[in-house]
Image 1: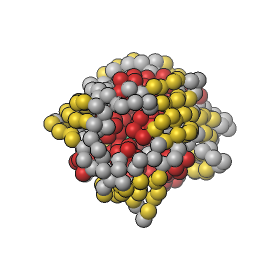
Image 2: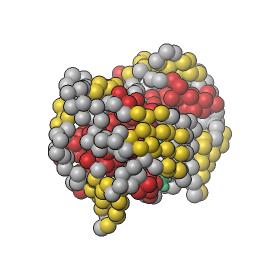
Image 3: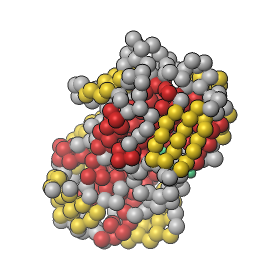
Length: 424
Ligand code: EPZ
């Protein structure tokens, strides 16, 4: 699948942000912990969500899409604990069933997960956490086997505030008796969303959003939380990464764009950097107005865990810095192989030097339409940034990678005045 973009159109108007991919994926797994039905609202219809739902069905769960963005999930008492290889390999977030199944049935079996090739992505922190809570953890032949031995709360210090490890430990801890403390926990908004959902389903969690999270497990909790007759209703937070991406689209090719359905405080590090680049950002209750009124200025970016600048917006920002006056330096501190888009941007005329976890971008350059390839989801978004501001036609190959995380991107950009379409 290819995306074909004719550059040079000015973007104007408003765009509505969808529910957060990285919250929806963990909430779908966490639904296994609630004894009763779960109704999730504001769930984006993107490929990664569809893959995660295939796993729910393979494990015996029921999935039903209701009206726009509303998802009904329910699980039988007896469910399968082994994730099929062909499904788990499709996305990294399949690893979030580890904590959910450990909480619900005290065991899980899964292949090491797949996902975007953005660097070395071990699971040592996840497994260390489960082990500290009395689960036997085995890694053999590329599979992870987790089995409750003497499940009980534990104290876990994370060497790195990993999002996935924090989520898996929080879920598993709901299903073991006693108190679990997670130190140096990840503080991303998606973690807070997961904790709010679990508390709504009957769990006891405090400190989510800080680096110290406390989970009071329930003695008999290893059969899920809440009552089988109860329905847990929850609405997924807006996608701060999708919102940040549209802010960068507007910075690259916009005049004035209103971004609706956002939680502005989740975007503070992004707003600050776009102000540095020379963009006006007016912050409203649940919307942002992004205005571009002059040339862009180069700035430096350091990616860090939340509330630092998000690594998921690093590639789109790299494309934007190609259009800015001066030299910008990006240091990528979360993943060790997330500059692959640089070579594709260079095909369009970008001046970028990469050395280890540093990239130096010289600008402004004239970006010229070309045939390029999306190497991962966010690299794909970066190529759209370059194509919108570029001269002539750009063809982005492997565009299905973009569909993994951006709902209706061509439709939304068309509504803002872009010339963009999918072709087979
Ligand atoms: C989540 O991935 C997101 N994915 C990623 O978004 C995001 O880039 C990342 O967090 C960081 O913000 C989902 O939520 C589904 P990590 P996750 O565990 O949980 C190292 C996107 O584009 N680490 O916080 O996999 C790891 O190697 C995706 O939407 C260990 O060393 O990220 C990495 O360098 C891409 N051992 C760093 O921590 C572990 O056991 C951050 O990884 C776990 C992680």
